[in-house]
Length: 174
Length: 434
Image 1 (tube, each protein chain N blue to C red):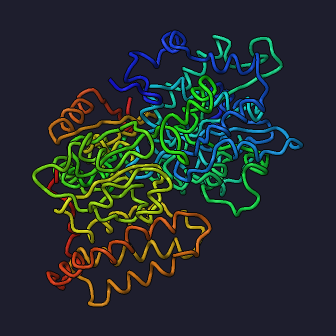
Image 2: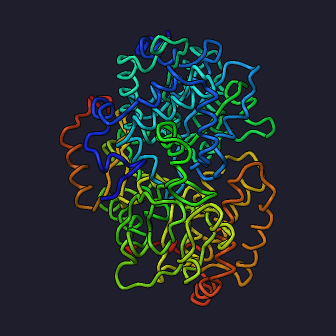
Image 3: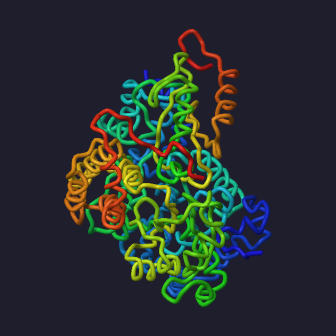
C-alpha cells in the first residue's frame, strides 16, 4: 500500500499537472515536501513510495533528498529553528543570537530538545540580510520567516508554540 | 518623493492586489502586446532598450531571447527566483510586494518567445511567497489573463511555481534546470546553451525576477524612455541591496551609475557606532573586498565602471559594508564556509578546494594556524581558479584572494595572537557590530 499516494492523492495529481506527462520526475521535490509534511523528515518508506509514483529509482529519489538541505532524512524536532549566520547576518549579531538560543533551549546547535519539539540549526543565507538576526521555522509542512529577532522575541515565539503544541503518545504532533 | 519603477509598491498602496494593479495600468502592456503586436515587436523593443540581466551576469536580455531557434518546440521561460547570494534580498521584496509587475514581465517574455508554459523557480525557503504567488496566478487565470486563447487570440499561457529545497547552486541557470527536471542541482556542461537545449532539452529563456519586472515598463514606454535612466551602456534603474555594518540596511532603487558614496553615506546613513568604513563587497559574498577609499566610494555603480575601476563585477548589486572593527580573516572564514556548504560537489577543485579553504581559515581564526597557513590558503585558491565548470568555485576565492592581498596584516595579527590548542572554539562575531 502506498501511503503517500493514499493520503495525498488529489494533491499529487495537482502537482503532476504542472509538468509534461513524460516528465514526471520533475515532481520529485514537491513530493518530498509532501512526504516530509507530517513528521518533518523523510523516511525510507516515503522514498520508495515516491519512486513508485514517479517511476524513478529509489536511489535517485534518495540522492535528491540528500542533496538539498531542506529535506531531512533523520528525525529531528517537529519544528526546526534555522538561524542564518552568514556574513551579512553575522555582522548584525547572528552568531551571538544563535548562542543565546542554544543556551535558552539547553541544546547544542544541531541538537533537539528532549520533548522532541525543537531542533536548532545553523543555515546559510535566507535573503533577509537587512532584517538580521533572523531565523526560519520549518515544521508542519510550512516554512516561516521571523525577522529582526532578539532572544526575547524568539523566546516568546518558542513558548507560544510550546503552549499550543500537544504531542500524542507516539510523540507525534497532533 | 521618489517615483519608483520596480519598487512601485512604495508609491502605491496595496499594489499586490489585482484590482489596484489594474487601476494603475497593470496588464495594459501585456494586453496590447498580444492583441496588437507581434512577438518580434516585443523582442525588438527589449533588445533596443539595452536591458541587461539583473541576476548578476548583466547579459543583454533581448539578445538572450533572440537566441531561441524557431524550428524546435516547445519553448519554455523560467523565472529565476532562487535568490541566495549572501547580501541579496531584492527579488524577495518584488515577489512579496509587487508580484503582478513581475508576473506581467514573465508573461511578456513568454509571448515574445512564444512559450506556452513558464515556470517560476523559487528557493524552497520562499515557501510563504510561493503560496501567495500561486494564489495570484489562480486569480489571473480566473480573470482571463492566463489560460487558453487569451483575449480571443491564438495565444495560450500557463505559469507554474516550483520550489527548490535549499541549494545556492540552483541560482546558476543550468543547475536550476537540472533541479526543475527533478535531478541534483549540478551545472551542465555548455554548450549547448539553455537557449537551444534548456528545460527538457527544449529552447529555454531563464531570467532573473528583477530583470522581468522591468519588461512591462519597457513595452509600455518604449526603449528610448528606458535610456532616460542609468548610463549609456547600463541603462535603467537597479535595486541595490545594502547590508552589513550600515545604519539603514535595505533595498534602494537607484539609476545605474549612482556612486557608492551616495548609497552608503547618503541613503544608508553611513557606518554605525563611530566606526570607519573599511571595505565594500559590491556583489555579496562572491565579491572581492574593495578597499573603501575615495576612488572606490566615487565609483559609479554600473556594470562597466565596477569592472574597469574596481576590477570586480557589480553582480547582483548586493553591497555589503565592512567597518574597521572587522578582521578580514574572520570574514573569509564566513565566506569560505558558505561556499564549502554550497559547492555542489561536481568538480573536484571546487568541492575539495572550498573544504580546504574553510579548514585553513578555521585554523587561522582559532589561533591554531601554522606560520605557513596563509600561504597555503593562497595556494589553494590558485588550485581552484579557472578550473571549475561554473562560477561558484571562482566566486569562492574572490574574498580570500583580495583579503590576503589587501589585508594581510589582519591575518598576521591572528597569527601573532595564536595559541596552540587545536580545539579552541572558533572566534565568531559574538558582539553585534551594529
